[in-house]
Length: 203
Image 1 (tube, rainbow, N blue to C red):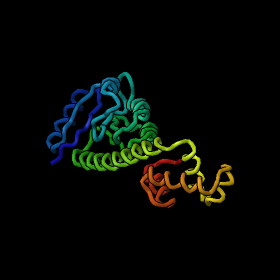
Image 2 (image 1 turned 120 degrees about the vertical axis):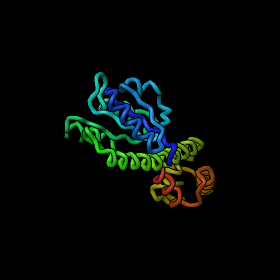
Image 3 (image 1 turned 30 degrees about the vertical axis):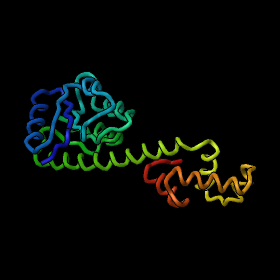
Image 4 (image 1 turned 45 degrees about the vertical axis):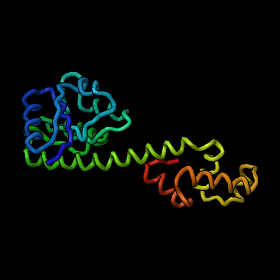
């Protein structure tokens, strides 16, 4: 059993309610939305651990909803439902971040397997997002000169080369390097590069 919270966005009330009952029967929390617009009104805090979204709805489509959600700081993984077997649109949904799509009527067991996958991906995604936010906060603590030195460190430059390029003394480079490592919570250039890479930061 789980307390993971899923959102069902579908303008077909019967399908929406059937999905909610199915999910709640497996121990999930489930909230229904009869339109993309209603879901967007919940705001970017997005407490859900996965989205099940109808591809074609009156008003805003599932595709447009994914485009809007891409602008949020963090969006949980989504699965698209379609009654039309519309492969081009399904492919477009995958490109926008949907991790799967299923045709209606769906098989309950297969859908639940994919929902479990949504939840696993959400856990991983939230962990990555948290790492990224932490790195952004740490980067924000650096001075402009420290960021310049860090950029050159990551480019593989030696202290002497950094000093020449920035027209500062070797001693000053050493001080800035030490401060960069201290503020970023690392002990080496390799560790610094790894921390940025793990957080998805292309600095």
